[in-house]
Image (cartoon, rainbow, N blue to C red; front, side, top):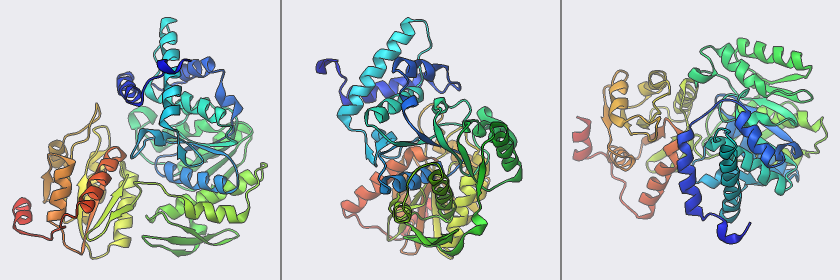
Length: 451
């Protein structure tokens, strides 16, 4: 391929925007067409495949750092991203370079055009990105790839993989019911689809009906199902900067991810590490400790500023909102809480608001973008059913400014509802701090907006 024919980075980003019109299509036909055109790069790779409702990204981060610390060339594939598109595809923690992304995406565009000429459907953005990631990981000679499902499991594009070392399941709760099913059993059955013969299944112990589904699927495939039990964690010490716990034979494992739920994600990663060691991977104990400590995953109960304390969290479903509320109660007892909330239209808005709103003194709503977006005014109307002090902001910038105006040194501002806009919130807050703008306490303007 001649250099002059390769798309520029801006052209790639424009192409990605164009791909949004193809939406989301459950099924493996398109990804099979793409991977076949690439001579099936996924067949040259080994995978730790992760499914679940919440916690996938955090478990992926823990496992990626553990494998990297053990000396393995490690690919990671994630969705959604927080700050930049290239975060989606990483090797040893480094995002794919702009030059390499342009080369890979140019090739993918040509393949898609050829498929359409052959009368086949145009692949979706996620299918293209997944196939491209497999190709990049093969070229980079990755020894293990930590792979996060996009939606569900059985019909997710990532489920084209066959050499799965471990099928990993984080907590399972209600989300994407229109696609995955309206009961926990149906949702679990979809996610259980990532189990493969010859793999080991490792699940965070949870609802009995979910565990029964996993047990049945593992039995059908004649593979072991190992449960990571949060109740077996000992010596738990929670904090905003560091948290520690003991689990199994390991004492005082330390993580730097805040959030009361992160200890569960970490011990699931520990359980997975033990199981893949039995399957030929050499992982020294010091690599386990180092990987857990080094792991960082943005947007998960992350403190991005202080005075006042400003937290961002990706809670975007009923379980995530419940876990957020649990963390707020634990870390910020007797503190003034202000929320900035933005939720996608197809999410369980009432369940999220019902779980979180009672803890806040005031709520600011913002609009989410895209075909699934929900305006701040619509969200404010619904939030008004659960809180008496709700203000619809015209922009994220205005919501942040209003929250600061209503704050004092004992206030905690928490932005949550969707991962899609947390990167923008972070840039606004960090930019505000860099400009040295005074973070005011409550004043007459703030009181006027509240009233």
